[in-house]
Length: 257
Image (cartoon, rainbow, N blue to C red; front, side, top):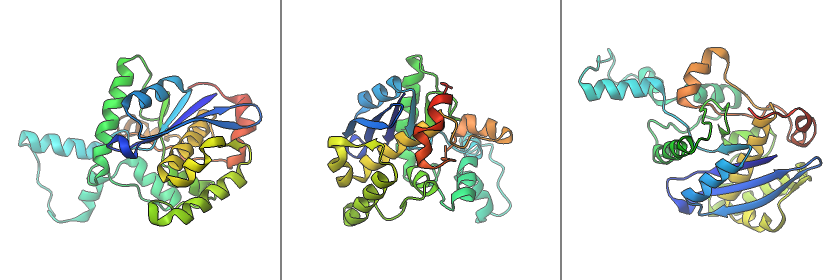
């Protein structure tokens, strides 16, 4: 199996993509690019059996309806114009709420934070994939699945805070140390120094590992009641089994979904 992980940013400079090849006994980081352009991202998502993208795959349905109603001049004004409840309903997707309940981490709001710039790029990439015949299912059932590296690290019991940015290089190195200790079967090879020098590279690798978990049925999927929202808004896949299980029970039972 080949999985890809994409740490997406609005611009190429901070965008990283990792390719991880899985064997019967372990995994090898085959390729890692920092400063990845659209061509590299499309190549990764097209070649991989499963590709994890660290970016919201859609916007909250209530937010979309709100913007359309406002655009058309048909918005019914809420009773409490400064109330938090209705703004929160617009700002976060169903998957953001579920992820917060499960991990204690609240995702950035694709409707109200700067990550919307990245999501715009992601939407265009998904459109390009669909035009090329790639199955795109924002709920995670196709080749592409939405991931949240920090939440994946938390699920696996690894450091998941304070490792981003040059000022936190020590924490980043500590994270790589713990990752390679917990997963001795993961061969970073010549790319290990790159991972130690860039949190974008590490997030791309973690995204590829999470894609593996999603591919072999070891990640959360939307409940039936949430499926309709997940299909339009996207759904974050959270690992549900230990990191070590990515190389054992999953391989035999894997099927492409």
